[in-house]
Amino acid sequence: MTGSSVRWGILGTGGIAATFTEDLLLLPGHEVAAVGSRSAGSATAFAERYGIPRAHASYAGLAADEGVDVVYVATPHPMHLEPARLCMEAGRAVLVEKPLTTSAADAEKLAAAAREHGVFAMEGMWTRFNPLVRRLHELVADGAVGEVTSVYADFSVAAEFDASHRQWSPDLGGGALLDLGCYPVSFTWPLLGPPATVQVTASPAPTGVDANTGIMFGYESGALALLHCGLVGDSPHAATVVGTRGRVDIAAPFYRPSSMTVLRTGAPPEEVTVDVAGHGFTYQAEEVARCLRAGLTESPLMPLDETIAILRTLDEIAARFTEQFADRRPASAQSTSTQP
View: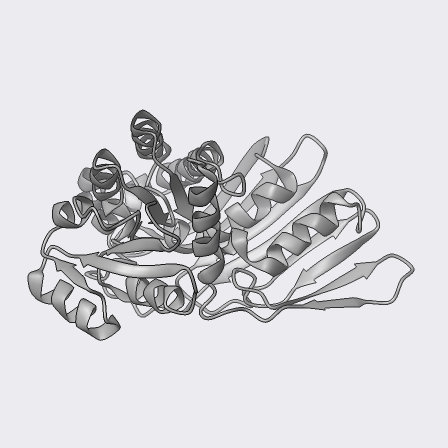
């Protein structure tokens, strides 16, 4: 960084890029300096829409922009690795939209590149930085509900089937797991850590990707996590953390919560609320700025090794699904993708 403001570049011009940019524009000390796309027209239109000074007709052009401190990689998740690596090789810090990559192996490549070039890199798992979620972690660490014995979280939507849409396409990293399931898994991780056992029950879509997936984690402590993700119906999008001396009910949507109820054994319910700024992406942007100003190359709230460990578990879930339905997957899906 060369000044007091963090200068952002936006890589990609889709919906999530727009949402994140809108939140950046709410924050003092943050400047959206440039945007890059594979299409000159798309980059120019995005720049004009948000008053961004520079539009690049390639990812390489954005990566080479010396007026950018950090790049937000907002492409579809199978297309995260190479653009992010390109930016890091040019000396740019990166915030990569979740999931960081589509496999732990690719995440390891990205982490190695960040460490080789000495630049900051972080997965944009925005839920981790939500102030209510951070307060939940503090309460659990302080023993507010005793030892955690179970976590419940669900994220399922009613998505219209369209074989060409990225949600349903194996070539575009489709399926409920990578798009939605990463949220309940990442939510559970700080509360219980890596699971000792993983059980999966899932139903495939006609394209072969997972359409409705149930996951159970088991832990050496005896704790359990029951998680659900899907594309075939709207679920409550809620979460509950149960402990030996109470529980915490996180109101929907748990991935962007603004309220929760703490129910301690023998005590009246305690309501905890926060006002979520913007779309909810401001908090991860502020964490990136904090880390850059402190000279950190990783965030202690979302370190790369933890992201890799979570992706390794997602890989295991995907493999279980693939094994269960190998004979029901279309030939094209079997030959072009190893993701569910």
